[in-house]
Image 1: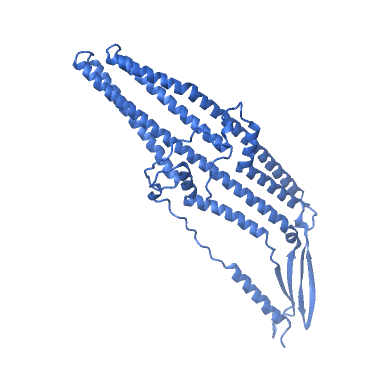
Image 2: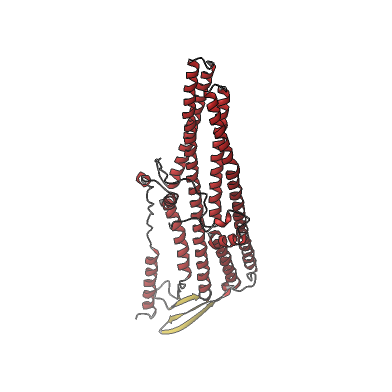
Length: 442
């Protein structure tokens, strides 16, 4: 005669086989796309083009996508109901004799009330962490855009320096020819030609050094954009324009700018502050979940017991007793982490205010130095150099006087170029501090 436990045994074995089948999963190896082909740099590139290339580079795109997918998976997991547990017990079966049929079998489904009670809180926490991760990725994209803009401007400045040194070399060669003519007619000593040759050699060395620096910066930008091999970059724009966009124009003059309005705008746009707010809110939700002590909620179970020819119901209750650990350390840890998140939020707000204020001051100082000093000194040195050159051609000043005037003019042009670059960098810093950089969607 077949025992009543035998069909249930078959059912349990079938469930076990189903669980084993669900546990067998394959893992597909990820494929990351190759770097950009040289054709991606065939056209002249703007600042925004370079940012799109850097943001769309396969490793960057894959890493950002993985972080978002991980946060989305956590949200999906937090919103799901906890699986019930199957408990199968066989008792009082013979281990020797003519038969070994189970005499008693119990099959129960167990569920944790703590998982059920905390499902909504866990889902809210996962959503806040997803929001924080999105803001963190946007902040990372903003930093990448800033770095690409700055590298673009550095390359523009380096190429402008090459052009400046090439102009100086051309002029030095012209003056060397003039010296040779003067020596030929006896209007200048022969030593002046040796000095002119030395000046030409020095100007050539300056050109070579400037070209080497520009090439190094070009290579750095190439690899930052995601090219695997060096490519020639054609730039469609100059460095960041000093004319402010309409949304940050008020920051140019500290007498007219409303600092509080700028700070409020930065607080609305900067993703770092949104991330810090989301991290703080998530930590509050985590501390609240810890304070609820769902670990002390019971696990309950219900099922059937087959014994002999009878079928009976069974119930189970499993609960942790807070005799030695009532959850106090976990609560203290939650409070400490919440305090840390609050400090991080305050620090983020402080850093934002400092960035906006300092960037505005740097831009004001850089614009003032460029307009009131560097450009005026360059104009005066250029005028003095032209007058000295005319006097030299008339034989009224020496070759040394001419070279001194030319070097002074060249130094003034270099100072003006560096001042303009600092002003452009300060403009870029302020635009970033206000969260006004144009960002692509990766």
